[in-house]
Figure 1 (cartoon, each protein chain N blue to C red):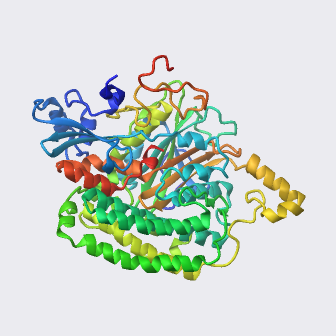
Figure 2: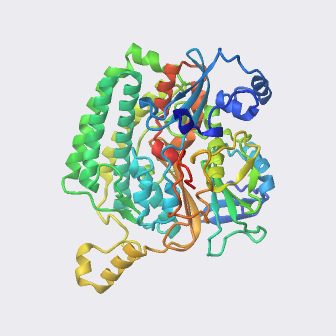
Figure 3: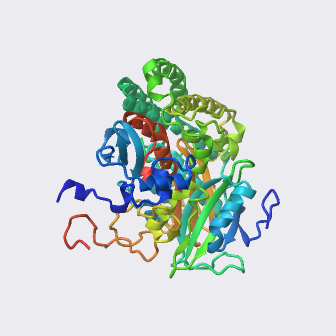
Length: 439
Length: 164
């Protein structure tokens, strides 16, 4: 069987213009708001002669498509006319799996979705579960502040990873090494706290998995004290460089109206100048008690998205400094025996503790029926969790609204009319994580 | 029931853990979302998903005027002006699973509607390109339906004879 037949995805692929519906053509040429449907219908009636344009395939195995994103592009020479992302190569049915896991096992599943910011996934799942349980007001403050600390550090590691891959995609290969180095230092701290570099299962319904280990404060301080210097180096290495600016400025422009219409969130939306950050607008945890700035761009281009992420790392460092000051003493998880497993030592001496331990880990805890939608600001945008409970110990339906999945839709709009080589910069600036796109 | 701003939307409402839920008839979905966008300022469609209530044993929480059906389309809308959220739940019968598409109102629902079609087999009238998005094009069945079995299904790979 030929290779083309093996990868054939039928109607999911980019089709010849002739006979296409105007609406879909509007999307593929990236003009939902820029062109009327009548104009698009007119376009679909003029099939360009075959030797003038070319449909090519980029990915799924392409180093700059961040995993297994596949793009079909219609090119006129080097200019991109139409783009269609084809996704699903990493689909593992995690929403279906989530229906078979108890609420306590749930975080192990969702943490694998956005593997560059696993703690945010765990957090949104835990917040949704707690809201269903009705204990969202009773979570101990220390647990909430630890969650804030960990998710902000995770934002740093995710954005630094973006800086690394963005540099690599555009040709600043040195940046790739520096970025991974900084990320590794954050992951080393995560490993100390949670036991794992990634996929932590640390934030759980009811609190966090364990209290912070001895000496954590020094580790965090070392981390956030060395980072500003390194960020300054990144600035020197990239921000002011003419080649870097040339590759990013004015590339992949999107307007605020388009971004909102397409449901884009996170740095992609903020790059257009819309100051929308859920930490500020609809605060969760204790984000209303810390002081930080929402970084916005002006032009909605790839350079703005790069600069926003670079400066959000600085804002996160500011937040972490305040967390270090404000982190209270107390429990790191709720003392609700139906939700929290008893401490290991209690199991040896108390019959009830043993029973609770056994019940929580075998059948899990029951959650009252109902449905909730909870959203947080992940490094990529609005990460939402819609959860339906039927009163049993497993979610009846667990849906994750992945920001990468929605943000990917703006790719055709940003790539239209640009060069193929700019396409790489645009994909990189969206920072999609395919594990979250395909779930 | 009305929201914080006191608006009355003229459709049955309910509340779930403090979140306002509107129950819209499926024929009106597209027009209603457009009305919410133009007159009430809900400018972003954050999420479109669905739930299959086929195996749901607990009592369904819907207002008395609404007949529960097998599927529900769930639309989460956001109003940036005053940072409020609203949720629409639309009943969709299992024997005729189709709803009007929101593509013309919020172009960003395109991928989400394709995902719902792929996972639940619910069709969206007026969607420009309703093809599968996560599963392969020739996949049989819609995985997130509750009558789609977990495990012990023949593995579907391309180019394998008699694989299904």
